[in-house]
Length: 169
Image 1 (spheres, rainbow, N blue to C red):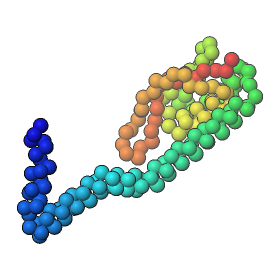
Image 2: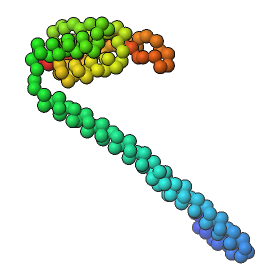
Image 3: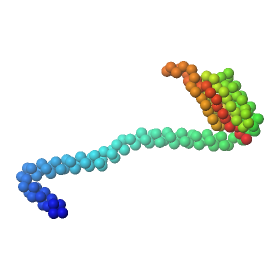
């Protein structure tokens, strides 16, 4: 314990033993180290946060707009009148003929509509799913899809497999 008590005394005696020029240099070095620590621990992280804030804000605004769009879409779907099963099936079959053509085969089993896809273009599938959701009130329940066709850059994306949709009650 006496060593710890002696440390400030040794430091004070070493300081008084320095010449005035050496004291100024040690004080300057301590000030530079203190400023570097202040910058490194205090200012640099805050400035990095300030620099990143506009990009984060833009991303959050885009996400909020997407969420609001989805909310409006959900509210619009909820506001639509209920469809009977027969009407939903007709709408689903019509959308399948228009959007999928010969690349999709629709079959109905119980409360599910199953679609077998064979090299269906991705955009046609997306359009059909949007129509099925909006016009037939059918929602995807299960999907087993694999990418088909040429995988070369710029080649159209094609899907094959099965897709099951839940029909309204």
